[in-house]
Length: 295
Image (cartoon, rainbow, N blue to C red; front, side):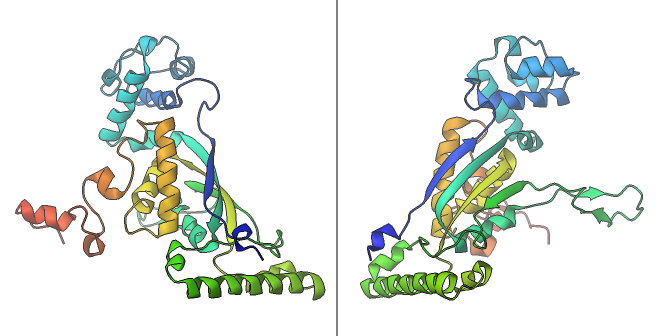
């Protein structure tokens, strides 16, 4: 069997982002945040985002030229001002989708950790510790569609080979033989034995290729870059997100200004004793400043 036809590498494509294909600067969508600083009506918001005249003032809006003459540079300055001021909620309105293939099941499971829920307090409950997290009252910051091993039969599956395996030819060969054995087991179970696909899939390994689509917003995506572009991130996850970051910077360089590993974005490492040492930790910075960090 030709192993090269069974082994796969990472591929991804950005499927959607605001104003995609229209010629309108996708970062203009964040001009909606001016609503927070001036009394804008719905028509004014629409005209402003699509690049039509709109006079305006406001503390953050002042960072950009009037929308009537807004250029890509002035929109970019406005977006960077939002990020610098910590008004990251505005980035939650900028949604995007990307598709991935040639990715292992073992790495894809990490995506579920980003399915955060917005929490809302029930106003009828006096105790401040009571928060509502029911499906109809919470909303995920990330949604994922993933190829099902229950409905997609895997008798001809592809698999991912970690680069380190190529440093030990004997291990690599045994790994390939294992995948061949698993493929034969899948074929036997699905065809000759006639077992349910949902049960036969129990024989698959974590190296089996999966495909998925993720939809999320720019704020959550920046957070994913913080964690997944880190030098200590697992190699496959880091490969995906460093590649995505490069593409998103081409699309929206200001929305993803300073985006990347936490140390690149924040200027320090939040990992504490687990830091790789590339950037100072908070404890180090507090120590240099002669400040005792709160317990």
